[in-house]
Image 1 (cartoon, rainbow, N blue to C red):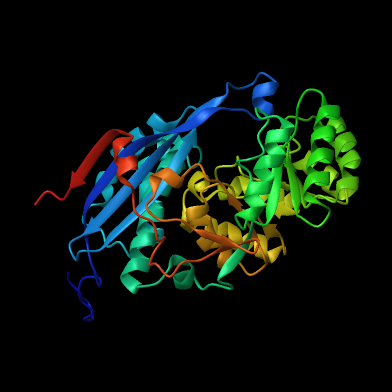
Image 2: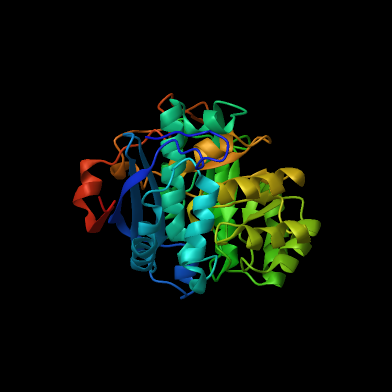
Length: 387
């Protein structure tokens, strides 16, 4: 490592990146997972999730790990883009995270600043934040400045539409017994009367005091969303998620003004700019950004500042291993989505008790890749310093 601070000398450098390892890991799912997009014929059942892992090492011995992901198509594209731009990190100081994000964006500027391109960069960005927190000996949330040591959490993985309502209710029972605080179930079927029957059954099963959310996965048009949203009011939902197309800011705004139930959306957007359109239109009560989808933690923090300025709640989507840190560092009380799908990838588990997800005292993200994750690796490349 080198460090200089003399007047007129080279910029101070605390450490340098010497290698980046990229791994494409395919996580198999237990059976075909179906939400409303499958039942309306827009997608096939989901059988796997593609992960992009980035492991960054420095000459000073520091290491960081980060990841991005893609459900269905897109995983190979993320891996290919990451492999192309990764050499631009070699020799750089890992502390300069914001500058490095900008450098990598410009490396691939011809393919834009959203979508698969920035999702690929997210793996690097998360790894750099993990590295910085580890070097400080702090959990990432503490490095960012935590407002709390735990967050409200709700489960989604037990509420999909490929399972019978009896199975969904059984899943809810086990989830609540495991210390998770709320239940989210999927709606948005072609026959929305069936949605109402499923919601009514789950509400009766879990009782009136347990937080309950629904997610239509963008499958309603504006009139249907208004009609079903009003019919759902009686169930005391925490929110209605993705009632409309993710980019219909005006439609979401009209719905948010008309319903008592909060409107939540944002998970499918892939940049801060796209989220800002929701904020600008007053289209959302609860913003649901996904750090891997919008380009990583650096971009998430920018968006969190905009959301806080409007006094919005946030409920980050998926990737709870990352989002528990970002949510605990958000001033307004947030929610974090509990998914058990990623359990096989890591050696560690997040603790859930009393309806809340708790920070661990492990430095950084507090995760290490499991041997199973290594076994599911379908492609791997290591980029080293040329010396």
